[in-house]
Length: 227
Image (cartoon, one colour):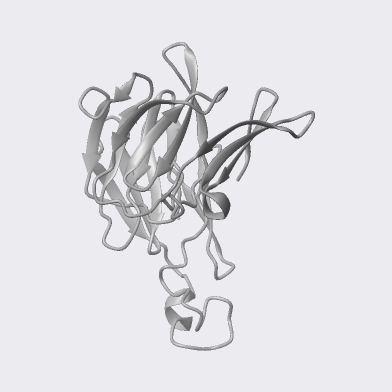
């Protein structure tokens, strides 16, 4: 998805053209273009993060997290995300703490890294790693807790430590019953238990999650979310 920074519209055209492109919002002319050969397995959206008195354009790419200058597209900092073959979930941030998840078959790692710095910040800015991948769904942060959805399970992690606080299976989903056949949208099309393609959102003290089956799940938030 495109994002706006000042008078620029930044478009992640990784799949279409191995590039990140910024357009002038008034004229539509290319303001800058950062070509990224070999990173076409990237479906994520960058975000803007305030850190160290500046704005970083932060994005997930296969195997790494990048912090760019949004005015020029130049790389400011990066760190490794081990075990990542592609980038499906977008990064999320709370203040200057960025959370990224490895993507691809067998990926099983998420990290928290403090935005800012210069060059390889893997040793200086990574706050924690945890053996969990969000898959496709982008996590959301609320009250020092990170909420992630994968395979019909809502997991809660501590933002400061990365420790898992709790997890709960989404109760009452029709997907398990329909995964073997039938005519429903969630049936017979590979949507089964893994139809977690959307990302959760938070409003007030509630989390909302829409599945490909057409169902929406609502949780009251806390260390043990109540459906």
